[in-house]
Amino acid sequence: MKALTVLPLTAGSARVEDRPDPVPAAGELLVEAVALGVCGTDREIADGEYGWAPPGADRLVLGHESLGRVRTAPAGSGFAEGDLVAGVVRRPDPVPCGACARGEFDMCRNGKYTERGIKEIDGYASELWTVETAYAVKIDKRLGELGVLMEPASVVAKAWDQIEHVGKRSWFEPQRVLVTGAGPIGMLAALLGVQRGLEVHVLDRVDAGPKPAAVAALGATYHSESAREVGERLRPDIVIEATGVPEVIADALAHNAEYGIVCLTGVSTAGRKIHVDVGGANRDIVLENDVVIGSVNANLKHYADAERALAAADPAWLGSLITRRVQLEDYATALKPEPDDIKVVLTF
Ligand SMILES: [Zn+2]
Ligand SMILES: [Zn+2]
Image (cartoon, protein in one colour):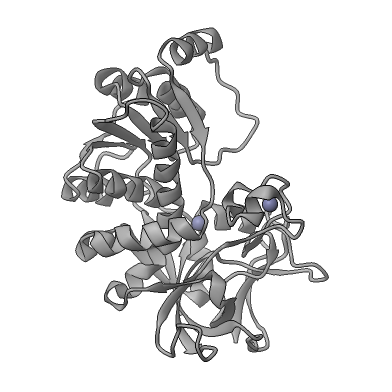
């Protein structure tokens, strides 16, 4: 079978190579790949900035946003040939820490977790892959190819879960949410906001193309002014930050409502310095009982939440998020972002 692999921490090492077909172990599904979402994490790994090969191997099979069709399933597993599935990304650390021991591997406390296609386990960028039934999520057949959005949707479902947990520490009836960044995470965060009946605003740099159109189609409001202008005007109860851009983060922290919750989901590169009035930010956060939370990854509960959110969404709208489809062999073009990209998908 063909697989897209990289030599971790080596820029330009990505290649499609032949690998032996995987053989499912007991309790595992054998899955034919249908599609694979590509995101900033894959680009970072391909650029040699991130990623770990499995123990004893040099190369890592890339890919963590999976969608496949079951070829074989263990009897009595609840899965059958032809089912559409996505594989979960993270696995609990072997110790395990208290969080992993309770199924909250997205909250791992010792950093020894592993991740398919990222950290020490081969990913899903291959024509065939196997996955433990416990880490396979069945996808409604009506979603079809749109099931490739399951993994980013799970990340967003976790972010909302965190926001709601934090909100419940006092009276909490938020009205207005600002999402910064109209990539797949931002768009899906906006979707889950609309599904909650909130007034949703999305901010991005571009002022034309598929992003403003998709936000409008959702019934949300699109903005392309600075985060400062938009934040000052809207004073959102909730901010979901999905750009990782330092200036946008600083404005998100500075301009929100009393009892504001800012959820940071974007991973930025360290080292770019900007001037921030930390005293001013501190005063706002203290005097308004604001909270800033970081959120990454997702556990099985969040995949279930994501499944419900995708099933309730308009399939045509979800389809508008997939702005480029690229054959596995042309992975290099998929790894190169284009300005109008929302979600780029490798097809098999
Ligand atoms: Zn991703
Ligand atoms: Zn752990």
